[in-house]
Length: 235
Image (cartoon, rainbow, N blue to C red; front, side):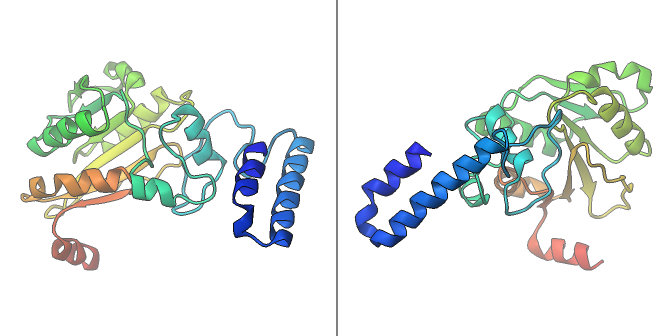
């Protein structure tokens, strides 16, 4: 509150006197109401776990809570405009990646890029495609699960989320889907950030675009040409 008052006092000459008084009154009133509510407002509420943020523009308390966990990310307090411009709408710093099946050339290139741009952990765990759920106990230490096309996709997701049910904030699932193949339908969940990554044989050309969109928290990331994406959506 005091910071806001000082800011408006410095720039008060740019405002009408009555406007400055109204701003100060609203600021003081808002702070007073927050105090009565025990410090809770639209950005600060009590919760045991941070839920998946589903708002594309406005900030809620789930999104703002991530800023308290990662102070160099999630700066928006009302809208996400700054985070979209600056690319600070996600945090991958030292997060650990697990891959179901083999790591493709595209995935390797993406992970190398993110290890530099976002300081993603280089410690990558490869899980056997035919592994049983009992053999996947180490999924509990994984922050980002990369899932390729497999008949057991939903089974792996269930195991991953069960292992991470006590996590304070939602884990990520990145599902790579070849637009030229029939893909497995994955059940949408509220306890993870689910990202669909669309790719084809030319996807290596679009790694920079992928990183750009990922930094702005896009949930569908087309590593394909615009025309291919439009055709895929219309199909």
